[in-house]
Image (cartoon, rainbow, N blue to C red; front, side, top):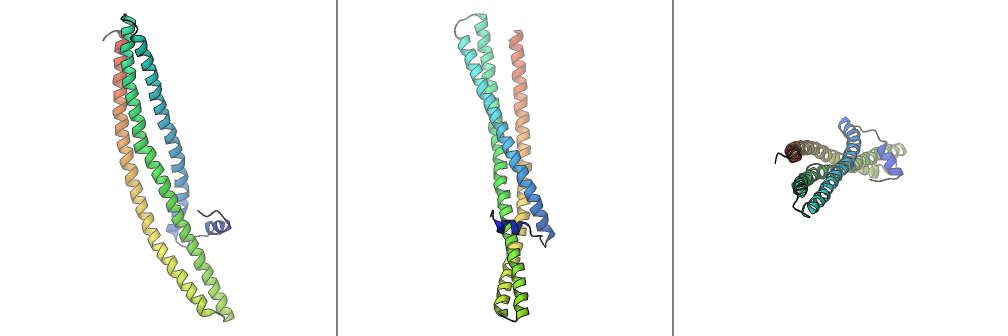
Length: 216
């Protein structure tokens, strides 16, 4: 995006089309929300990865203790180390699933929403050019000087604005359809995986309690 006086002028233009005015307002908010969600998703994924690493270290330490002797306490350490190893695998899968189904999705649509904002900027820039061409034509007619040149410039700006408006509207409609479908699909799949992993963790906790109670 152009960050200059020109960019300020363009961003301050009131759009003549309610559809594009709404899209511009929406995309500014949407982009910021997706950016924030993406950062939080990355932190969540790293937290699960860190937890998996912690389980691995704990399990390895317990295994090392368990192999030092054949006493009951050492056998107990070996059993618990197995549970930590299984928990580590589940936690690592949780991290990988969240990264694939959520973090990657948010990063992709962060780029896509920026592209949509850039598209709206180019259209606004074209609108400014068109309005300036209209003013230049009015001045040329008032002075009766360079009218043909001003008319030609105005017509070209008009055609360019109409063309980019038509294509931009279709692109924005398609963008909405794609993102709604993608978020629905990925979030449903992620929820199903989260439930699967939660059930796995519950089973492991029950097994751990059984070991602690001496039932196994």
